[in-house]
Each structure stands twice: as structure tokens, then as C-alpha cells.
Image 1 (cartoon, rainbow, N blue to C red):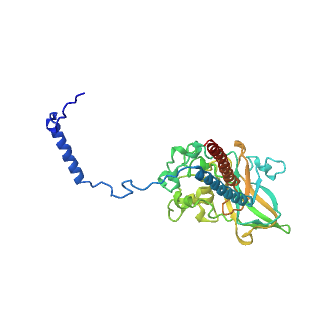
Image 2: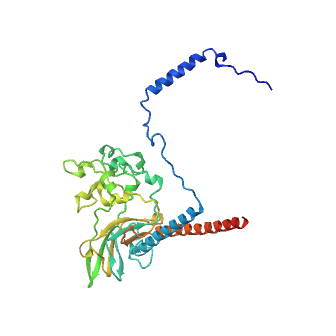
Image 3: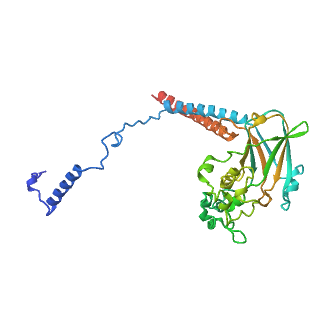
Length: 371
């Protein structure tokens, strides 16, 4: 086969205008190279020249790796589970549905200022500090229409929204006379209103066990998320002029704590605790701590009486109420699930390591026999 003689560049046929385009491209390239202000630095990081390392997932690496991870998870799981088991928790239901409950008389919603008692005892020291919670069940605070029923501008002390609450607060935006409600919305209107007083029975006499009610709200809520309006002539009440309390409240927001003026308004500790919504329908919220005076080390063995001002109705939504006494450890409150989860994951890793070892040994020895 004969091949033609290659043609020299001189004989190459140029398309009209192509030479001009090539010159323009060279000119643009030279100009670009001459002024590259946005060009990254010539470093290994910016030019993506960093050395890379990729493990070779051989049996000699994967099997020991799964084994070590499994042993570590099992060790952590045992520590968490044992620690959780050592945390003491005492729960008492006080809804009043049982025959032996003294709170049954208070279930009638027409009864006001009803007081009932829950009696219990400790056979040994309930080590402190002791945290005291109230708990509710079948209460969906994460329900969407409930969760958005709030005016965040009111809660940062913006008085412009006191007289014109957000429409999301409806039907708790204004009262029957048209007066704006502050704080408005379903969350604030449904604030928990039961109160508790604890006594230790010593020689037949009641000795008050003090609750430390300070600092029970989240730091971010108290210091950042919620703010009181500026007092008018030194009075917080005047800052709420022209507004009214939520429908289900017995007193306005600026009078929630008659014993501590600093614990009123939107910075009231109980209000802040309630406004932080729970994710699940069964939850508990902190009411106070027992860590002062003779009870700094906990609740001594003996008999106790919890006096309850029963105000909060739960029958309408089929809920229940309870009180919880608990102490804590380095991992927080009692949480058996966390330890069990670590134990399960660690066991699965060990099982996987054993399975891979069996498969590896079987096929490796088969290859050796075949050779």
C-alpha cells in the first residue's frame, strides 16, 4: 500500500479567519497569565497536592479492627450500664386515678385550690444532690400547631408586639374583651401550675425540706433567648400596661413569684422550663434541687410527705402526672438505653469479627490445599 507524502505545515490550508482567532487566544492567555490576582497560593493544600493514605482492607487489618472496636464498646457499655444502675430514682403517680390516692378528690375541675399529699419513705440515704421533677404523659408538646403558637418578639421584651400579638397565637391572641394577651399562644397558656412542698417527718413533726428553685432553666434561655421589657418608672408591671394574662393563668406574668422580684416576667424559672418544649409525649421537667442545709448530702432515711397544690388538669387528654426524685452521676441521669446500645454494638462487632475470621480461614486453607 502506498502512502502519500506528508504535507508540511507550509502547505496546510488555513480556514479564513482562523489565524486571527489563534492570535486572539494567545493574547488572552498571555494577559490572563500576567494578571492572576485570584490564583491560589502555590502550596500543597491549595493546589491539592497533599499526600493521601488509603488503608488496605485486608483480613489482617479488618478482623483485629472489629475486635478492638467491639471490646472498646463493650467496656464503655458496661461502665455506662453499671453507673446507670447505681443512680437512684423514686417515682410517684399523683393523678388521683387509684383508690388509695388522696389526690382523687382533686380531679374534679370545679374544685379550686385543692391540696393533696403523697407519702413515701427511704430505707437508706438517698444520696444528693437530689433533683426533683414533675412528669406528664400523653402530652404532645411537639405538635406543630402547638409549637408555633407563640410570639417570639414578645418574649424578647419588644413592647411593640404586646399590643398586637402574632396571629400564630390564635385563639390565645386576645381575651374575650379584645385585650391582647402577653405572653400569648398555646404554650404559655398551658403552663404547668401545680406546686409542691416537701416535709420530712421527724418525731411526728413536719420538718420543711427546702427546694432550690434557682438556675433550673437552661442558661441560653435565661441569658439569651428570653428578655424582659425595660421597666417603666422602675416598675415591670407598667411595662405590661394594656395587656392581660393568659386565660388559664391565675396571675399575670410579672407577678409569678411574689417572693423574688427578679424571678418575674419572661425570666421566671418555671416559665422558662415550661417554654422549652419536650420532644416526646412522656416527659419530665425540673422543678427544683435538694442540696441545702441538712439535706446537702441527700435525703436521710425516714418518712416524707409531699404536699401538692393540685391545679393542672390532665383528664381531658388522658394524661397522667407524677413526681420524680433522682440523683445524678458523671453521665447525667439514669439512662439504661445508652449502656445497652454500646453493649449491643460491641457484641455485633465481635460477632462480625468471628464470622470474618471463619470465612477467611475456610477460604485461605482451601486455597492452600488446592495449591
